[in-house]
Image (tube, rainbow over all chains, first blue to last red; front, side):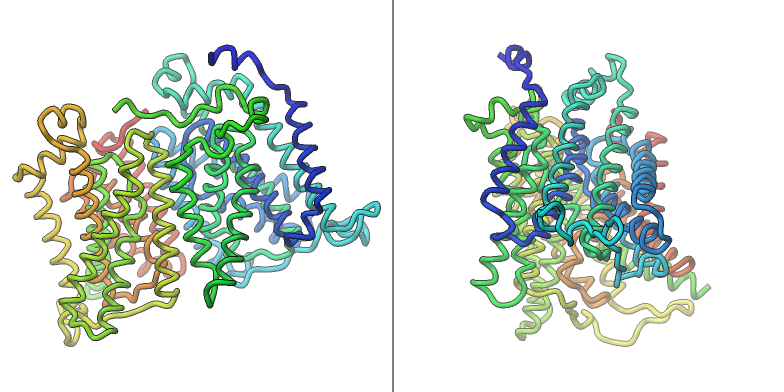
Length: 348
Length: 289
């Protein structure tokens, strides 16, 4: 059964078709009329960071609780290099991704020889260390007040602000951001199907057996973690330029948790988990905000945190494989073979 | 000398809380093999309940008991609704579930009590006690006494009582334990109740020393976890030692090196300590893959 499913590999073009269809639909109903455009673009950046997380958490089976810090490395690089030193954005992206990968590499090297929950705790600690450093290095980061980052632009044209070929700025940014997400998903799909991807999947189901088959477990996991950190930094640079402002709030623990929820909600075992999760998470947060604003006085923040927490618990208990594991009729074609399996249940 | 002693004692006072939270990690891990991320939130709930009761005119000792019971109740609920239904799931899924529980509780706390820090009067009022030139708030002695009491009673519980041994048995081999007539489900419930109650009590005791807000849970959980791991994740007494180590390290780094970088340096040092100890194979609770 599983064998026959594995043989029926959906092609990457199938994915692209689906994604293009989705984008077209979004375009048709003109989501930008319903939701704030920035929310939609932000959703894409989160999805991008989430795609990296899927590689580590879903494919190699390790929990990461500090992803926002890597996102933050990207955003603060934009602030320190592009905004303050006038670097071109491409150079900033390269440097930010390199820094992020090195940090991820060091963390991975140290932590992966230990058992599962250590990466969770180490990345959590790293997230808090990062925030503390940001507050401390005030001359560079602006401390708690943050700093502004100019929009991306060529000449007088500014990305996300001015219209492009008759498409208004917000919608154009939305399209570009989601196209990048699809690119990231395609990249992840390629990794999952490659030799190293299979090594990571083998590692997830049985580290011992994988090690016996000659897979360097520490190296494979560290590689995945480095890649995930670099992707998050990439998303962070773009985020900073699009939003135009960087402050510690955007990289707090809560954001890391949102990213964690995003990938678990969408489905840890599917390459489409992160984008699906980003959409579901955004809807959940917006709905909670809407309800809180109409039903209670004061800030809606506590209810958003509650909703996020409840969402994790419920999804993990009801469908540990997330939204992507629910078998929609259309879904059969879009699922990745071997990666749809729900988290292994222990023998006892 | 007085400066060193001051830092040391401040560290021990703060460390006592990490110790008790760490013991909670050990207790739950010993019985259910779950790393319970919501551990710090139980302390937050204890602290917030106590400040609410005292503000409403309840005498402090009564408020202490009520807050502890309240936290324990939340612990049972967490076990019933999130941990018990996830029996048999892989451990990474269960850790993520406890992360969700932690945020659910934090949001609940924020909705009920807001974000402002709250305080309580010291358990025994009076000026700080002077020891060898260091001035120590009286509350520090409550914290130290409580931490030691908890460590000792749990050691006795696990090593000398039938229920304690049954709990250990259901952790190391649930199936074998079941054959001996031990119900692992009941043991898990007991572990959560006791851990949450202890964390709640610790939360109340710390409030007079450092004002508490609804956001204290996550840092407390992280430092408590580190305390538990330094102690090997198996022994409650060692977790107490781990807690004091974390507290003293934090106070010394904050005092001597940089108070602005205190939390970064503490986590860094503890992280290194953790790695060095686990590399030597001294941590019995750390499985190497």
